[in-house]
Length: 260
Image: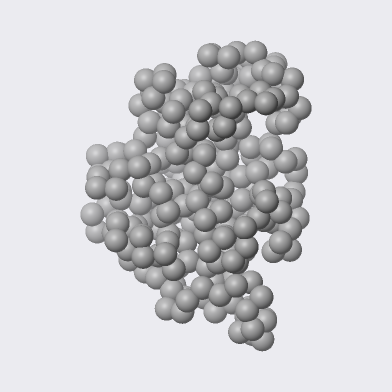
């Protein structure tokens, strides 16, 4: 797989599958009734799905100056599929403090909710404390946090590169906030999905439906989207897909000075 090759070149993957990717409807998978799994690099993943300020008929995502208004993260055990911990905060926007009617209708987030939310900087600090606790109790390491294990055994997963590559990255730059370096590496599950199932979904809901999963909760609720992303990630792993870092904003830099 192209993703596996890239990950190996970056030194972000120590363990790979011994047999190649197969489509969802492959004959071997159908005959066995279950996937042939090899040793997976990651024991856990953290699914992240931000919700941000938005407007009807707005510019494409890469040109927007959206602000995060919902910050969810879901820690899932890839051996059991169980969600073992969650982080969830609503954020107060300061550049465009008044939500559009379109944004409220899409996300279900009200003006009162964001008015009583916390600043993004506070949320990042609280997330780091949550992350430190959850990783330590399970003996988990994120990518590039250790010289001896550059791939780590836990990684962030998103659906597309928007959440960490555009939304968080641009907002921290604009507001001159210090972004923790562990947010620079993640797995784009849409890329993994397309490669493994040989199918390009129209949207996230289509991706779930195509593999027989139902969306649980409200679409475009950040926490519900993150939970469903964790379910899809577990499905992919059980079907035999290889998880590997697909995006690294600092490919030649280790995060050894980031204390967790």
